[in-house]
Image 1 (cartoon, helix red, strand yellow):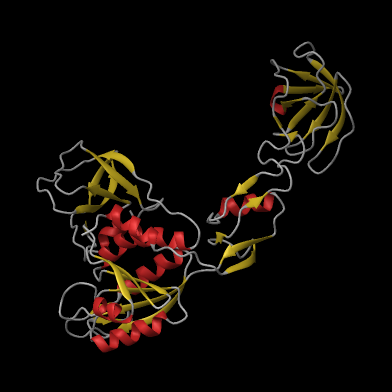
Image 2 (tube, rainbow, N blue to C red; image 1 turned 180 degrees about the vertical axis):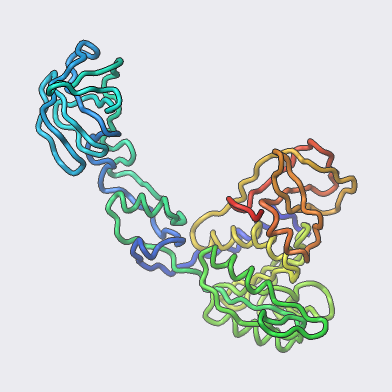
Amino acid sequence: MLTVSAALDALKQQVRLNPRIQTLSLDEALGYTLASAVISSLAVPDFDNSAMDGYVLAVDDINKLDSYTLVQRIAAGETGRALMAGEAARIFTGAPIPPGGNTVVMQEDCTVVEGCLQIQGRLTLGQHIRRRGEDVQAGREILPAGCRLGAAELGLLAAIGVAHVAVRAPLRVALLSTGKELVEPGQPLGAGQIYNSNRYAIGALLREAGCSVSDFGIVADMLADTRAALQAAAQDHDVVVSSGGVSVGEEDHVKAAVSELGELALWKIAMKPGKPFAFGRIGEADFIGLPGNPVSSFVTFQLLVRPFLAARQGGQYQALWLELPAGFSLAKAGQRDEYLRVRIENNALQPYTNQSSAVLTSAVWADGLALLPAGQTVKPGDVLRYWPLRGWRSV
């Protein structure tokens, strides 16, 4: 079996860049991936301006004068006239620095008496002035190709006057579930049946990854049905994702069906949870087979599928591993790398009480994954690698 690292390397070799490009307005572009780098045509800010509400001074000899003649008022969006040495202007945040102005003093450090501005404290020449181009320089690349557009990126594009961007069209993903025991939420459960949680969890993960998802429903545990469903899903889709049916049981037909329709390039990963993971190709579509257990599919998606989908869209996605002490002990060493669902409590990692791959509450409770390498035991204080899954958690 491949390690997670080796599996990632193997998946990288299979990446084909999504060729479809579309142009979107900034209002539409959230979550999309840039198809080409963005070069700024202007500087930001485009003029020297005040960093705060206060007074701009024409300082001739720093700290020589403690009183300046107040001659004008400059609001944001206005242009003041030139200042002579010893003159000052009332100025507001973002307003242009007038010619001759070279220092801004905050209003809290000033007193106005009969048209004269009196300064308390020492000055530093050039203080509180935002210089032209200190944020963005004209002609410089501000966002690279492959950048995922979030709120900050969209704000930066707007700041340089960009209204539309060329982005990679969303990957078209067909999602299907296998298992005669599965029932859709809202329907009554029969004996031995469970609700299809993977459809919603995996579908949400795919949409978070910027994909357009088509739901192909639940496939019966029969080879002919599985083959037909996979063949249909591969039509007009870039990726086919299934959950369940990739293990070695008599009711698991996905592996055999993919092998008949195309090729299976990757199967079984030395990780816990998530060993029965598969990758291959059906026609022109990539195939990804996720385990049926909900936590296994959740973890393998995070570690393997998300980076692959990002690469197919021209971007990158890497786990941000941190190092934190364990707040627990584990005397029995495992045979595979294990990804524990943990949360940070009192500056140490604590695991969920039940690490079963069927216990989806562990993924809701956890704020991250802790890597426990194969053959390693744990005692309190041991440093483990920790990957935060999100910036918030359920209480």
